[in-house]
Image 1 (cartoon, rainbow, N blue to C red):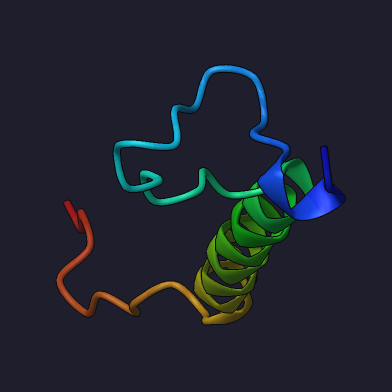
Image 2 (image 1 turned 180 degrees about the vertical axis):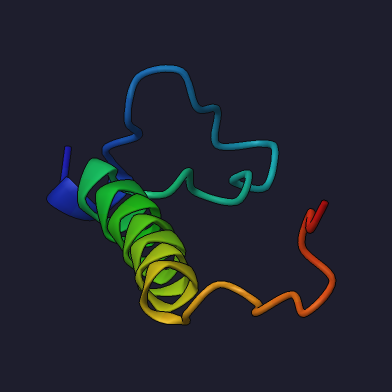
Length: 59
């Protein structure tokens, strides 16, 4: 039996291989990129000064 004919467990040779699931590293990179984008957005929101209302409660 040659190495080229070895089929990984759970896969058959008669059906086409399904799209390989993302590796754990790729999933972690996507999650970190999304988290970083959220943190950048939050930081920008916190850096902007609050709106200055001219019609505050004056009695």
